[in-house]
Image: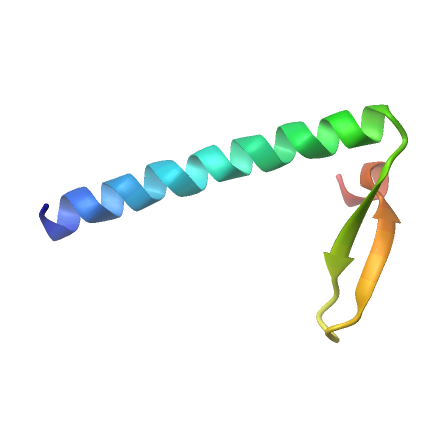
Length: 53
């Protein structure tokens, strides 16, 4: 596999993960659920999904 093919494959995987994350957030927001995120300060927070969108 060439470097170009490797980069293209990684780009497709990252794109798919972004789509999956967006769908998950939309579903959780629709159900008024929270998500768990880690802030820049390293502290873990629980926030409503609709606030994260």
